Image (cartoon, rainbow, N blue to C red; front, side):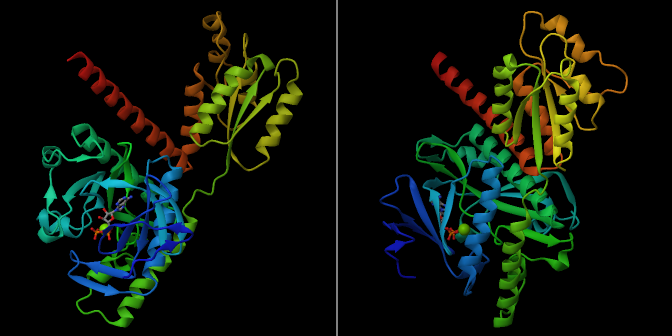
Amino acid sequence: MSAPKEVAGYKLGKLIIEGKTKQVFDLPDVPNQCMLINKDRITAGDGVKAHDMEGKAAISNQTNAKVFNILNSAGIKTAFVKMVSPTAFISKKCEMVPIEWVTRRLATGSFLKRNPGVPEGFRFTPPKQETFFKDDANHDPQWSEEQIVSAKFKFNGLVIGQDEVDYMRKVTILVFEVLEKAWALRDCALIDMKIEFGVDQEGNILLADVIDSDSWRLWPSGDKRLMVDKQVYRNLATVTAADLDTVKRNFAWVKDQLDHLLPTVHHKVVVFMGSPADTEHCQKIAKAARELGLDVDLRITSAHKATEETLRIMKQYEDTNNALVFIAVAGRSNGLGPVLSGNTSYPVINCPPPSDKLVQDIWSSLSVPSGLGCATVIYPDSAALMAAQIIGLKDYIIWARIRSKQLEMAAALRKADNKLQNLTV
Ligand SMILES: Nc1ncnc2c1ncn2[C@@H]1O[C@H](COP(=O)(O)OP(=O)(O)O)[C@@H](O)[C@H]1O
Ligand SMILES: [Mg+2]
C-alpha cells in the first residue's frame, strides 16, 4: 500500500507503524494526534490466513467510529477523536500497551481449549477477564497480571504497575458491559471481545486501537449458528469469493445495526424550587446532573402559595411521554416534594437547601402522609446521582456514565494516595 500525502485535508507525516489491518501516520499540523487508515485486508491466525476484501476498510472504519462514539458518550476515556474519511479516522497519538484485554460472557473458542472440561456456553458472572501479550510470532501468549506488572512497561513516562493494570481491567469490563447492553437492544448477544489501551502524550491511559467486527463474537438472538463476526472467516477451511462476500455482508449488517444502538428513551429531570432564593442550590443539582448526561429543567413554583400552578407545570411534563424524575427544593417546611409526590406516579426526590435549621426542617420531607413515596437527600450531587440511577434503569448510556465516574473517582484516589506516599517516604 503506497503512502498517501494528504487525507481529508490533513497533511500526513511519517508512517509511525503499519500492522496487519491499519497504517498509522503522524499529523505534523495536529500535535498529539495521529491518523489511522484502514486497509482492505482481513486476516486470521496471527496473520497466517489473509485476504484482500474490497470495501472492508470502509466498513471497519465506520463500525469503529460508531462504537467509539457510543463509548465516548458513555464517559469512557478513549483515544478516538473523529472519523475524517470513509477509511480513516483521527486518534490521540499513544504509545500502545502491547496487551490484548479480553472479556468473555460465554465460554467458547480458545477458552475451551485452555480450560478442558468447561462446556461451551458456560456463563461467566461477572464476565471473565483475560490478558494476552501481543506477540504474533508466539501466538499471543496468555499473560497473568503479575507478568504484566513484572514487565515494568513504561509508556510516555507512565510505568504500568498494579494500579494501572487494575484500571485497565475495570475499564475493559465496563466497555464489555456497555456494548453488551447496547447490542441487547437489537437482540444480539455479545459473547466476548478484545480491546487495547494506549498511553497518550500526557501519560493518560486511554482505550485505543479499534473496535470492529474483528474485535468480538456477536450472536444474533444468542444463537451461535447465526454468528455475524470474524469467526465466520476464521472457520473457513478454503476461502472462495462467495465466502468473502458472506463475511463482508455480515460486517456491513453489523455496521448498519450500530445506528440503532443508542437508547431511544427520552428523559427529563425537572428541578422544582419553591423560591428564587434556592437558585444557587438548584444550579448545583443541575450541574451535577448534566455532567452525568441528564437533560435538566429548572422551574420556580411554590406548592404552598400556588398549588394549582405547581400541579399544572407538573402535568405539562407528564404529558410529554418522557421518562421523568422530579426533584423538589424547598426551604423551611417542604410542601413541594410531598405535594408533587402525592399527585404523580413518577419518582420525586426532595433535596432541601442548606440552612441552620436543616435538622428540624428535614422532618417535613421525611415524615410524609401515607400513600407518598418521595425520597430525601441533602447534597446536590446526591440528588443528581439518584436521578441518574433512576433514568439509568432504562438508558444504558446514563448507567454507564455513573459507572465511568465511579471508576475515575477510584483511580483519582489511588493517584492521590500514591502521591502522598511518595511525598512522605
Ligand atoms: N491511537 C494510536 N496511537 C498509536 N498507535 C496506535 C493507535 N491505535 C492503534 N495503534 C497501533 O497501530 C498498529 C496498527 O494496527 P493493526 O494493523 O491492527 O496492527 P496489528 O496487526 O499489530 O494488530 C498497532 O500496532 C496498534 O497498536
Ligand atoms: Mg490489530
